[in-house]
Figure 1 (cartoon, rainbow, N blue to C red):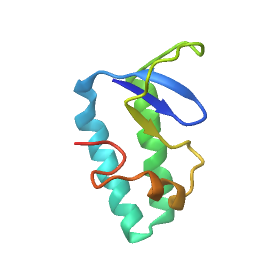
Figure 2 (cartoon, rainbow, N blue to C red):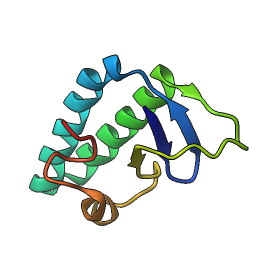
Figure 3 (cartoon, rainbow, N blue to C red):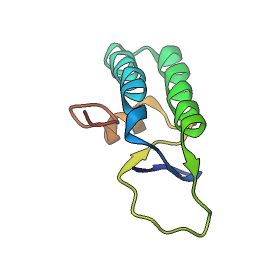
Length: 92
């Protein structure tokens, strides 16, 4: 799966990593629902770090369609709330 981190680029991520990412996504969703700003910031950073660590960066000139778009590390709670689906940022 191709994942885009807004403002950074794309990474190719194996589907086998989505269980780990979904745990962080669920935590992020709980923090957003409760208005936990500091927890949200830490978990968003952990989620993006995991995508970077587990994924393989695509070249900057690659134009692959992104199947998943994640917010930038400096996105606000309100900005991320607009990106959410019922499943959170990561479907499943």
